[in-house]
Amino acid sequence: MSKSKQDKSERKSQRRPASGKRKASAERVLEGLGVSPGVAVGKAHVRESSEIKVVEYTVSSSAVEGEVERFDAAVQRARLQLGKLRQHAAALHGAAAEELGYLLEAHGQMLGSSRLIHGVENRIRKARQNAEAAVMKEIAGIAESFEQMDDPYLRGRATDIREVGHRVVRNLSDQGFTSFADLRSNSIVLAEEITPADTALMDPSKIGGFATALGGAEGHTAIMARSLGIPAVLGIADLLGAIQAGDVVIIDGDEGRVVINPKPSRLKQYAARQKALAREVKSLARLRDVAARTRDGERVLLQANMELPREVGQAVAVGAEGVGLLRTEFLFMNREDLPDEEEQFEALRGIIDGLGGRMLTVRTIDVGGDKLGSAFGRELEGTTNPALGLRAIRLSLKERSLLETQLAAMLRAAAYGPLRILLPMISTVSEVREVRAAMVKVARRLKRRGVKLPERNPDIGVMIEVPGAALAADALAQEADFFALGTNDLTMYTLAIDRAEEGVAHLYNPLHPGVLRLIQFTVEAGLRARLPTCVCGEMAGDPRYTALFLGMGVRDLSMTANALPRVKNRILKIDLQEATRRASMVMDQVDSGRIAALIDDFNEG
Ligand code: PEP
Ligand code: MG
Image (cartoon, rainbow, N blue to C red):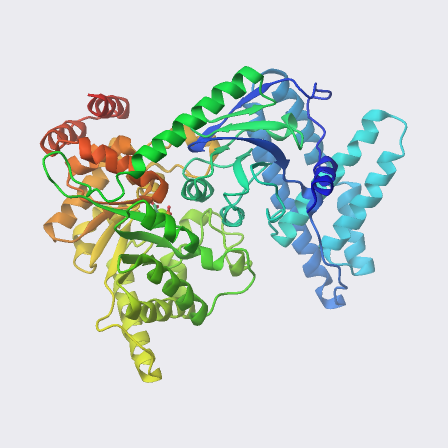
């Protein structure tokens, strides 16, 4: 896209600030959750609903009532979304809270028994228009009548009706708002919400950073941002009211801060920070070929987590000794159909080739929770509590062809390099047995087909991320070939706190004694059964926790490649004997504040 065209489209997508007139140059500082470290400075790209495109078709008379129901469900979802946003707005201070509250209230009312709802239902029933097209036509008509009014306040409602309508259309079509392909380099993306699937479309050479109104620190959007190395701040309720496309924005992913139209002195300060960060990255790069050993000589295996195949080069470049977790959700994102065996095999084979003989740990699909794959259509929608529903291995065991296709692709890929299979969200031994039986069946079928297979079937590992699985680690150790500790979900399920929910993010604490005890229990069960036990949740990539893990007996950590050099640097400074003594002190504590203080004290000492 040419520069002038892009400038024009950015101006077109400018939002009216919620707080009315705002001096274009006034600096504003907004606080949120810093979920992906680093600093980015660039021009704002406000991801707008105006970019929505819908297809138009005629609904058969027998399908009309179903179409009305589909529309009603999308409206219901929009009401829930607005309710959630209103809650966040209420937590803000002063005028911003009031302003945003009114705006969201007005949007909510438009979704009540209004001209919009009746108009759309009429269009579906009488003109047999599909719901998306009916909404777009109805909002165009209403917006036009608002725009013709003399009262400037009422004229302003045209924007609101469009926003509300676009929200419903997004819910109807499950469409991501836009691809990010046309962005200029160093753009800062600002949006109400960015899903993990959106993040998969982000090119870090174009997108300097992003910020959103919704989202928690340990959700998958945050994980994707960290793995792509894109600084990000989530959970800023009044973000979109404060910003216009083209504004200069700083994203400070370390401090959880977004600065809009920064003063020259602040820009200077951040430029210095960026330089210091670049120096640190360069200096840590020299550790690439240094073995990860504690000061007293204990060897630690450092592996990479991968979300997307394109990360394999980065994993090797930072010196990862293998991939401890490949999340296969990427194969199912941003599409309406399911990938077949061949496509999955090719993707795995490409990664195996890139790893040059290093181990690849491939996890079967972990869809559900905050990872709703569009490829599964509405199958997973409407679940009252997706995190406790048909998620991960439960879906694979229900949809056998899904599991068998994945296993076939993995078995075939294992003929080209070391590969092991990991099962997400296991809670009972029978689930592992069922997968083993399925693998034997698939291997037999592949053999009959005459395809190349490995000499022996790959190892099967179990994710320990459900508290019940941690407590039954002894039993699971008898069925599994290895363990992978998923501390993200283990924390969420143990504390009953949604990892992707900004409203409870302050309560999400992996240092809670309950979580630490479950980790310890699992590590000890793994040691007793001589089972390799890797920690692959986000805690593994935080150097703050490295000494604690080593002291607990962990010798295998897998993390986003960008975090690996810092963790290695920490390991080189640790005295294992001392770390073991400190870990046992930590495990004696009952209070997470005291635990955090002991850990910080040890790290700083
Ligand atoms: C975890 O839960 O810690 C984990 C590694 O899996 P995911 O983050 O993909 O749920
Ligand atoms: Mg998990």
